[in-house]
Every structure is written in structure tokens, then in C-alpha cells.
Length: 167
Image (cartoon, rainbow, N blue to C red; front, side, top):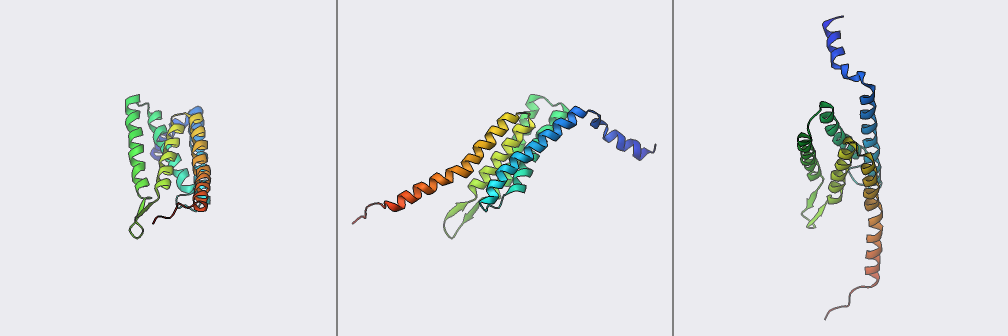
């Protein structure tokens, strides 16, 4: 066997543990599914950060947790990894927030919060907390999908009953 062949074999020697490969596959695929569910809702609402963005954020967060776990880092080191994921995703979220000078309005806050929350879901999946991640995905979907319905109902009610005119 050539030097190149031995080097390639040595690099992929860790794939001999089928159980570890299955864990990584399940967690990354679950992260893609959960992130995609939230991204689909956002895409249906016509938001810029849709399915692909949410899938990549969720998968990336899970992977940033899985890699150190595989390396066998301590809990205190994992805490720093999680802090890094949170800080890093903050930069991405900041890019989605737009301050419109014309209308003195800020837009993109819900998108930024959704991306941030999607990273948290990915972190939970990476840590092996699949039940928590699934529950939080359902709750986030409810917030994104159902809360606007209540807001529209409140606004419609307010427009039917305008405040009394002032003199």
C-alpha cells in the first residue's frame, strides 16, 4: 500500500465504530429535519431566511457540539463551545436585522430570533437531547405560525373599535 493509501486509511479509521457513525447520522439528520420545519414556516411567510438557512444553522450547531463530544472534551470545555456557538450565531442574526431610516422601523427581529432559536435546537440535538429539541421545535413553530393569527385578530378588533376622537 502506498503512503497516500495508508494516510487516507488512517484518516478514516474512526469510521470503524458503526455506532458512532449512526449517532452522528441520526443527530445531524434530525437537526436538518427540525431546522427545515422552522425554515419552511418562515419561507411560506416570504421571509429571506428559509428552509436552507434554518437547516444549515441547526445542522451546524449540532455538528459544533458533536465534534468536541467525539474528541472527549470535559463539561467545562463544552460550556465554552456552546458559548462560542451562541456568539457566532449572533453575528449571523445581526445581519438579518435592518434599520429602515425612512420609516424609523426595525425589521428582521423575528427572523434573527428564529435563527438564534434554531441554533439552540441544533445544540440540543448535538447534546443528545432529542426530545427537548423536538418539543422546542413544536413550540417555536406554534409561536411563528399561530401567534400572528392572534395579532391579526387583535388588530382587526382594534380597527372596528377606534379610540374616541379627541377635541
